Image 1 (cartoon, rainbow, N blue to C red):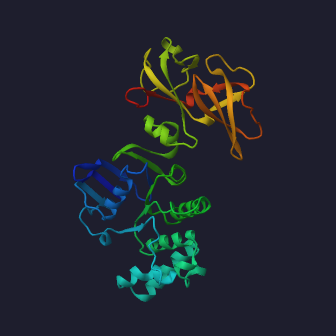
Image 2: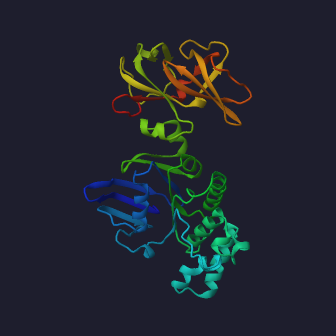
Image 3: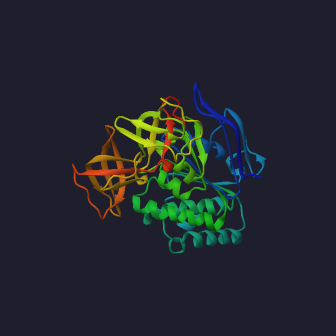
Length: 362
């Protein structure tokens, strides 16, 4: 049995279609991340699962039960919002227990659930404080704890880290991952931050315009994006793209753009590569190497350094290839000077080819 099943889900606001015939099966204990730019429909989808929005068409099942028209409190979900939404006049302990007290649970059971959540989230020293005396990260942990005490099967997170600074986001990201390992509950997490998605998810659903562009494991999405949008959205720094054509005969196919020719002998094509087809050649900055000497024919070209951008453990070197700027990730121990001539070595096995018209992976 799947933990959450979404079947032919559509949501419209007037004449605007926000979600269009979505189908997703979330396995029991899976961490699914809904990823995409603002306005892609990811939060709308999460709110539909939570019961906070009415759907136009389709059905939603949680643990095999049709909850399409159930109230949020009857769906067996716990939700963590972008804003902490804590009661400022209550202590942490009372914030955690409020929903349980309203539901009429026995006092002993409430205390046990609070103790368990406080232990998991390291909130014991904070139980008697009020939200004003907490840091942003501590407040968000309390918000997570408030969902945790409900003892439900499915947790929904709506961009819970977006209001925090970079250091706190990194720390809480690790805590959420540990929490999932401890509980093994199903978690559906909305974010526009690709780093959160890649580090947290068992699977990522990349969304655009109310449609799922690709639903797959993080490494598959990173290394074999299904289309140009997924390739450009995932990765920091972004994937490099060059427009050109496929040339050559039989097993000697190559990508050609201006004065650049790269052999495609090791490229894992999903369909036959036809001559003169207009394509977009995509390659990530870490899948190119810089050498002082030329590499093998068909896998190497000369380039001029435009800029060396130190980033700590590594550096980003910007160069011009086939008239376009590209970036290469290198070890920071070697510095490159503007105007310096170098040789680039390509790895076609790690590249991505997209049809220039459909923008789908070739």
